[in-house]
Length: 283
Length: 263
Image (cartoon, rainbow over all chains, first blue to last red; front, side, top):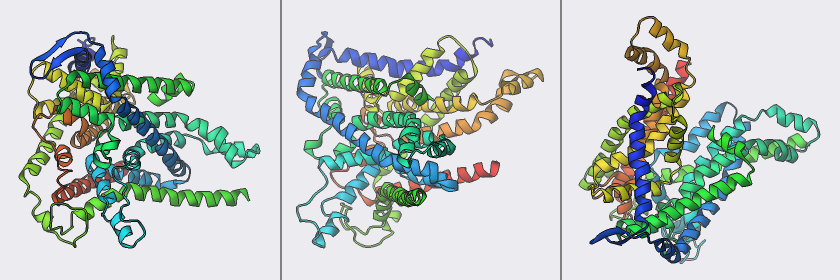
């Protein structure tokens, strides 16, 4: 009986994860090779051309998404790193208060936060409308429906997920190592570049993983803050699945997206040089 | 010289940190403020003076109320299921050595790292292939799926810090397996279980992407909101958002205070 305990404990989760994660992914792989339509049904024809067709039609949106995701991730890194640095080294006794304030947005629904940005940035809303009535902006000026609005929205929504892991890795850095570097005549900049930055790379890695994947695949920001020229792959997959009922195309696109993200992560891990980084991120 | 430059830099970073916090909070401020906006039309984007009427008419829009109620029910039920099976898996992974442990860990990691969009799309593929109608049940299934790994990881992290000799002592004193679990193991891992439960509830009530694939014609709070973006978000949504925000902050602060008192 004791020997069976772990298997019995794991059984319900195994079943849930196999039936609702593994089997569906397999089902999606199968659907992506089928042909047919929603009314007559779909049949397996091993048509790999589904992938070629989907890609030739939607590669602009696919690459736009990867571009937006990458831009937002870089922006989050540049904006978030100094914040994490300051809280970790200078936050003192109020560290947890600052972290709490950074997490405050998560008490508001993700969708509602994005829509609030839509409010704030709307053409005649409280921000632009006021500036326009003061004559500080031309009447035709708008922010919504631009690339900037979408990338800024993505940056906004996942920024805390970038700051937290970087903070955690910086918090573990012993300030005495920095003092030691300075005692050995390293300038502040050199001490940062040669001591602090390398020690914080696992946090940066984890932060990039936690933000790039969801930001790239997100349909909400493009829908709420973007215009017709900012459609991302997430919107396309949603429309193909839910409106056009073109399951094979949608499945092929989903798989392509996942494959590209996985390859991206793998290349990125290699470029940083490392299984240790992966290990550190897993910890 | 160096230290003065350093101090100036620190002060600038201090101000900068507050600016980022301000930026992160600004949409919340807007959301709360426009819940008090005396707007005459359905569109709620410009300020028309202060009113409390949306708080009085909070449940006037019946399909919005239904959507909010659906969200709460689904979050409660999926949290209970996730916490039970996720805690079991966390115990198995944290306390026992067994065949297939590596594969199980991989499965848990895969569930966390699959993009939400792909998870939702693949679930829809399954439900369509199996001819299963989409409703509150399929939404609950999906929510358990994406919360499960987070609960498992949280509980496992707590389990590995436990001293196994406590359980052995209880068993030596004649406690049954169930009695040991209820009186020794469970109290010790409870903080992890509760943290997992809060995480699961928050993930569920907030989810839009996965739900949008598996909802059929059932609407949740986030889905209702996105659905009414084009026609204008009524102020009641702001009020509901404000109330949920207030409740969440209260619970978090209460939790922190309780944790401080315990130590």
